[in-house]
Image (cartoon, rainbow, N blue to C red; front, top):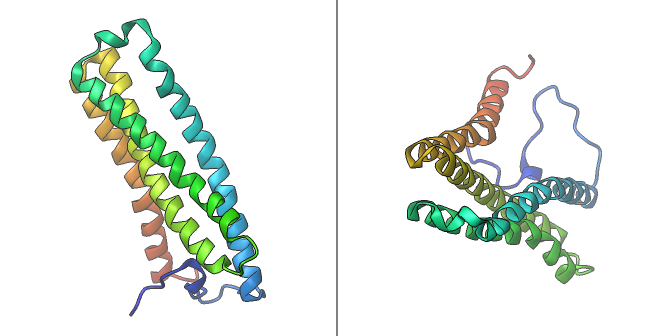
Length: 173
């Protein structure tokens, strides 16, 4: 059985009431929901980026392990990429405004949001590595980074997919 390519291609679960909306209304709703998700995500990215941008100006920054300097630089680059990916749907909307391309916009926005979340998780893992590495040593930092990435993987991917699989096996529970 072919998997749906987009959220609006997902058939309703048995027993679930389907929304009574036109394709245009569904696209408008999907776009509004996506924008709300991006607002929440952007706040986190901004805080994380601000934290990273002030670090090199601290007195002890020159004393950190060269490996942690590399971790810091990777975190800064991923934070910048996260920002670009999360803002991309908004800029695309400005370019495509009034061109009747909302389906393309929703699909592009969904892809960019997912990519931005992956970059955000990686950034957060690197920041955890950096902070714990400075405070408790490189080994502890690396283990903390791996642990935080594992938590993101479990909470953001494994858990939602497991819940969907479970519900599909027992749709009326």
